[in-house]
Length: 238
Image (cartoon, rainbow, N blue to C red; front, side, top):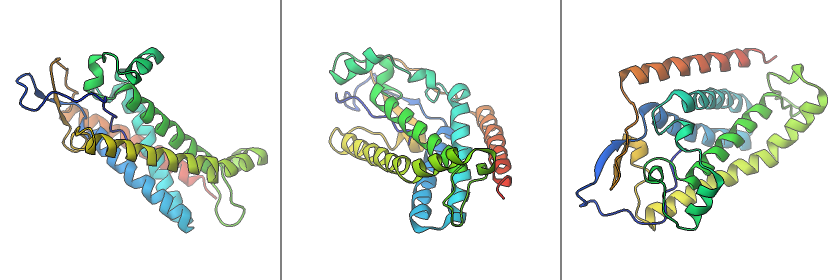
C-alpha cells in the first residue's frame, strides 16, 4: 500500500555507470506494507462474508498497523518519513505535465504516489475509526459505541458500510491498476524494492534510509505500544 507511483519517463538503463543500489524502504516499512495489504483483504472478506468476530479482530490489527505507520512517518527511515514525500501543489502539477522532476521523485514516492499513499492512509484511518463506533443493530457493535451519541453511531455505521467501504475498494483498485501499469507498460521496478528494500538510483546521489538493528528494535517497540493500545480499545467492547 505504500509502493510509489513512478514518473512516466523511463529511467536510464541498468548498464548506466552512475546507477547504484540504495536502501529506500526500511524493513519496518516493508513489513507494514505487506501486513496492511493482507489485513485489508481479510477485512473485506470477513465484512462481505458476515464473519464479524474476525472482522473486528482484523480491524484491531489494522488499527495497530495504521497507528504504527503514522508514528513511523515521523521517526522512520529517510524515505518512509512523511517529510520526504509532502509536495507542494505546484510540484504535483509540474509532475503531471511531465516537467523536470525533483530528485526525490526518482527515489521515494513521486507526487502522484504520495497523493495515493496519503489518500489510502486517510480513508483507512477513517474506516477503522467509524468501525469502532458503528453498530449494525443485529449482532455487531464497536467497542466505543457506548461513549458516543446515537446520532454519531448512526452516521458512523452508515458511512462505514457505504461510502467508506466503496471508497476503500475504489482506491485499492486504482492503486493496483497504477502499479500494474508502471510495471508492465513503463517497465519500472516497483514491487521488488518493497520486498528487499533496495532501489537502483540513477544520475543523482541519494541518501539511504536507516535500516539497522537499532531502528528495527525501535520499530518493534513502537508497534508493541500500538498493538497494546488497540488491545485496550478491544477490551472496551461489551
